[in-house]
Image 1 (tube, rainbow, N blue to C red):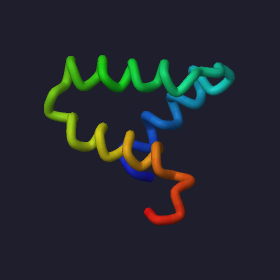
Image 2: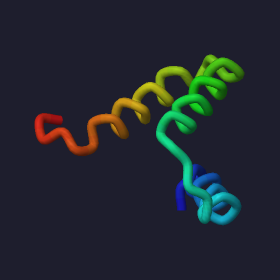
Image 3: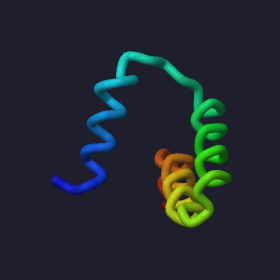
Length: 58
């Protein structure tokens, strides 16, 4: 198990039944980066990956 798996599992356990919009998620990611600027690059990579999931060129 990767270290990050615990956080993902906690997220699923605590909030897995909720429905959110991508706009809400984007706001939370911006908020997180504002509070934790060292994580800007990984958060941007995650956001870009999520944005392009259905793009066959990527």
